[in-house]
Length: 142
Image 1 (cartoon, rainbow, N blue to C red):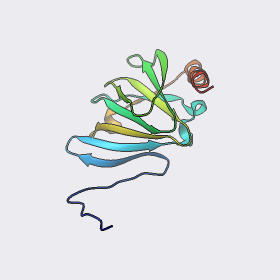
Image 2: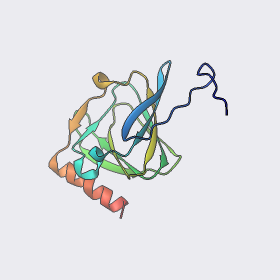
Image 3: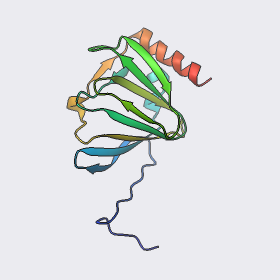
């Protein structure tokens, strides 16, 4: 089949580990995130928030737990959501979050194009919160 020029259509894929932006257009970005060994429950020791934008996650394959942290300057309470395929999960601006993936997971991410390190701070989890993340994952993925 003859390929079409990129002036008509862009076709992007990401089969490697971790996060990769695929399309940036005007104020928005679409990315894929796949399994990464850095985000197993036992290794999650921090959460991130975006101070200027919401962030949308869609599970396309495998399994993903979205960890949500309540709190302002620090995480005060941790929740876990076992994502269902093809549902949209919109993490609101200013909400702490992290995630863990099964090895076959593929998650579509839609966010503002200007979501960068300077407006996406991290905060460390306490030892108790780290243990809670592990226990929440065990309960959801028995």
